[in-house]
Image 1 (spheres, rainbow, N blue to C red):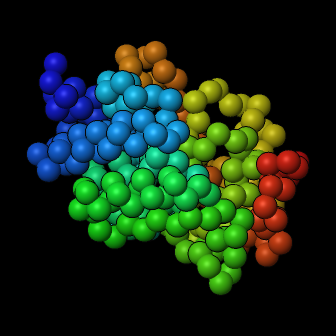
Image 2: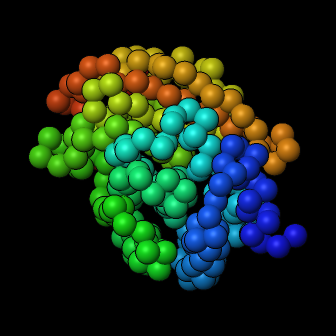
Image 3: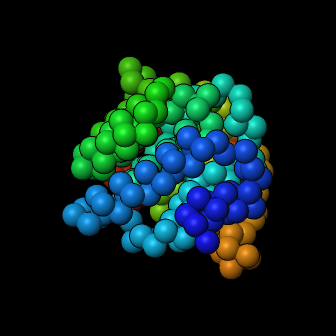
Length: 240
């Protein structure tokens, strides 16, 4: 199967069936750049085309199962790494105003190159830590949506992410496991940080082989000013 046909087939499975030729070319270019840069820096352990389409592109785009992304929304992707989920979302929904934040500058250089070569606009990159940029004089409570595919427990991620979310906005954590216990353990942190559990969207990728879910947390109160705590504290000592 041609690369284009495989991409179209996989994104159609999650409800996206109107990619333009330009968007297809952007995804293919993104893939080629990912593999090229991954040859000299660690961006992803997944490099086979079909796996990247399923586990990175389609998975990133699964946010449409939780939100109408055709609206004009501002979105920040915390710990974006190689640009997931923010870049695939920007390609398919150019109306989104997106910020990609990562703590490693070499990843930011890669993202800047992808953005340039794909001709994307209204998308910014930031080299820095979530704890620093969630301050009032930076990006605190500026976004409709905060998303993260970062590997961390939900208590820690909530402390990193909820401070960026506007009142009545949402934080969405992409998770790959059944997380009833993790969600239960995060209840206090979510409450303390001004959030409220809203919904959980379960789905599978690759013909049911890969279990995924989206945890949606609504921002119902302002985050207390002492959060997030200084760098590293949220991961070492999650709110409990």
